[in-house]
Length: 258
View 1 (spheres, one colour):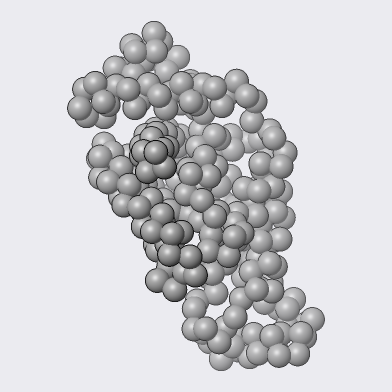
View 2 (spheres, rainbow, N blue to C red):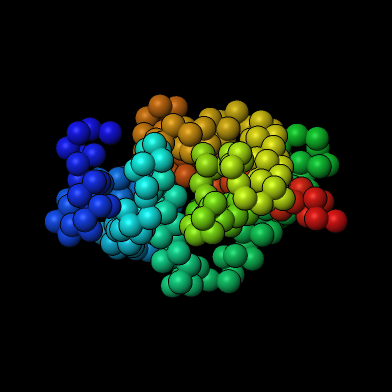
């Protein structure tokens, strides 16, 4: 942490200095814009980018108020899930995705799971389309329609962050060695193990998209430039990957609770 930044934290935490708080918000605002920019393409134009930024600012303010710089953690790591969670909570509160889209998403998730069990490998697009009695074009449209659902659905499966607040992104699925509840810590470890196994089973390109998006922090557009495809194609790969992972997680977690 730079000296000027450290001084701002001291001024705010020790004296509740309003000016220091304002400067901290402005200092980390680019982080909010970055996260909003990662989420925006999956929303297919339903919402303005600035609306997502406004929702994310609430998460940033919450993170600033709750962050303890004396613990030695990076603020960016602490704030990421709270900013993203604030945006996703705002989207959920609007209840903007039609139930018909949720049903289609579930049907597609089940088809991917059932075919993978039958074939012993991830099914190709043509096989899924045939299984659903769809043409290739109809299947592509289905992938596009269900993309917004995958934006929030996997986070719901991953569960809450360690403070009981915002949902944890993929890169935070690491068990907390200091967790107060050993049962919760065990569950987090099990979910992480399931997730790693599920990612390893993804088709190569989908696995690469997941790695670049969730672990390297690239946007869909940047991923497209890396692997040489369009942003819309990356979105399709991301949607299919998340549906496969969601199917794996939901079924494996059900087995753990039986």
